[in-house]
Length: 130
Image: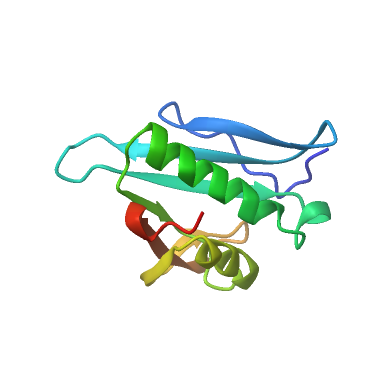
């Protein structure tokens, strides 16, 4: 079962997917998109339980989700924004072609009221590593 770090309920404009392993919920992925044609892009998020991290499942989920957004929804650019200190997630995203755009300072508030920096990363469809 999810622990206290399990993400909250996403907004109504978000498409959600449950990540299963052997029939057990081990995470979720979600995506949203910017509908303005001048800025059209999709953003993704991924969360995996600590029990399955470090085995390549995250890379597989990100690749499947990126392929879906590029091939089926025709997005030319995708974005993701992990915490700067989440080096494992950043390495995962780089494996599929995401590139660092820049650091968003004091981007996400922790439970204790302090702030974490986020790394904005993007992926152009032509740079996707399948």
